Amino acid sequence: MTVSPGNDEAIVGGLARLNGEPVVVVGHQKGRDLKERQRRNFGSARPEGFRKALRLAKMAEKFGKPLLCFVDTPAAAADLRAEELGISEAIARNLREFALLEIPVVVAIIGEGGSGGALGLAIGDRVVMLEHSVYSVIPPEGCAAILWHDRHEAPMRRRLEDYGAGC
Image (cartoon, rainbow, N blue to C red):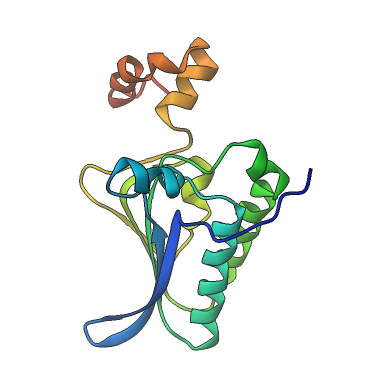
């Protein structure tokens, strides 16, 4: 089976102005309604999305512009297609390349910052979070699936995380 990569709509980015200064912006986009959320894979980036983010980061570096990253994802895509296209390699490459960027990088966790899906964009000089944002090594559903063999336990177990007893 041959899988051809394409545009990952879970990652968006481009040029912008912040206080009149040019910057490069990249971030997750979950979508607003069910149809758009499905098209954007609920904000879970595929390898093509991480590669898109890296291209934007390298462009920012080439032109000496600051990079702003907005993170809002439950996790990276975890399906067969993502594995075939090299999701692990794409995240690992972003970790290395973002750490080596020679421009200012500011990361804002604006919702969920789950697992490798967040890390692929969340390496920066400054990382900030909105008040009710979550930055975790694993989403609650993944934690419940591993610890209790039932991802449907997540809502109940999510409360445990507030007390530090979860993942």
